[in-house]
Length: 496
Image (cartoon, rainbow, N blue to C red):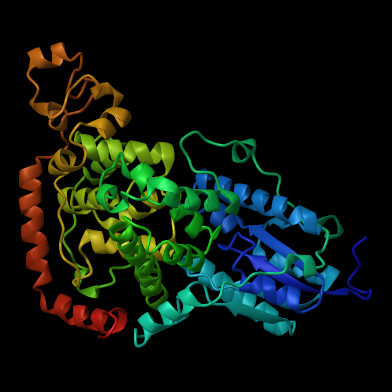
């Protein structure tokens, strides 16, 4: 039976799990075990996140699957993650009435503003109770860094440092049955795998990593931009990295082990650069986290986004994959079903929203977050603003969805897969279905238009692209944008 607040409480070390759902390369867990005290592993499903628009059921299913996988690995050692549901402070308070929490261990989290504010509250709570909260660096992201001096060297040192391997056999784990908390009873939908959606857990993370080097990754550099082929030839590690089923250091050191494999150098060079980018973009968000709410370049605050009465109608076309541009719509529908598309297609979706439709990026950023199974706040916001061309420091890229389809889905394999209403229309006609004559529509058993199988385009691409170019290049020359660009480069660019 758990002890009451008036009785002598057993001393414990508490490991608070967040986006680090693994048992390998886990410094907080190793430190807790090294303390010599019994260890309580805790994960809290917090209402403020369960209800947040950035997240959807796919994320919490993935987290639940990850926790289940951890518990299977912990079983031989008598351990199990205590999974609670509720306010984090209230959960910690309840634990502290049952045990004497001598120290709490966790990884630093570069998350949304609400998780940052929660962590501040947790810090105050720990200080008031003389609990030693030890936070450990996540990857190569430096907490609160205001410049990139020495950042690359630090990244390399971190990634090449020995992996921290917790000695689970040395741990005494607290039995969750001895803890009186409001535990979570997950919905049945969380407990069922979803076809086409990656399943969470470190076991599958390592299987995915190993399968990449067995064969499918050899053509990574050549297939990375292809919406269909990238699904197999890309690493597919992004959700496992986002939720911490595997660490960046583990995947980077595995890459180094294969560096001299014959015929792999180009693909491994491309993959290696993306591991650098992973930490680079999270560091940008860590250093300037209010980009969650505003343009990182304040010179764009008055940027002339549309404010007409049709904005939300067109936004909905984009969200549902009904814009009339096949590759845009195929990408969005693929995301709804699987939670994954490759980087180029993600960029194209943001470009279409912000450039062609001229809709404020803040109206679409949460929608894509809720669809990306690998949603990582730091990467998401930094990348979204870069592709929306509101940083003032990055190249302006306006993606032509028709041209992208012709170059990267020339046989329309991806489009036919996700737009079944167009499956009978061959390439290249399927790239511009609004040009089909009535006779061709009859021949291919499809009707195009407002009341047809597939809609007409919601805008004229050439006109929208020209207007976007004029708008963006003109705005980039504004004095305030240029001034802000210098400030941004000073903070976020690594000095040579």
